[in-house]
Length: 186
View (cartoon, rainbow, N blue to C red):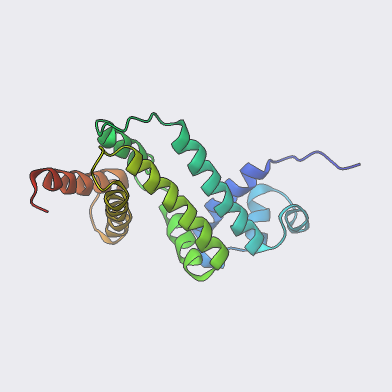
């Protein structure tokens, strides 16, 4: 008879993201076991090795992104683009925990399975942006570029010495780009 789980898989994965944010690429199962109050052997039994946990984190992130994006209202008239961008960028908050995302991105660059899941997440976001653009707006290409602004602005924020929160920093750059696109300057 198996014993009941004292901590859910989702809570273990959330804790793994916290440990990843603190430890960076040196994240270990021992660190995670200590954080969640389980033995290293229990983690291995439930999830497998470190790479398997990282893959589960990335899979969970892709699934959560899809579910969240599908839950948001959809209006393809173009009137919902800015509120949608505010919603998705606003979810970044002030940037707390963003170091885990940067570490995960570095791991995704090296691991094909993680990279494929990152591509899935990016495609989901770009499709959601495209669906909210007005007809005839070269939706896919425009969505790709708006998403590039979001991704690039997050990295600019990492390197900035500003006290501005992450979402405010990114929204400022998106607002500038959209205003200039509308005026035909770019």
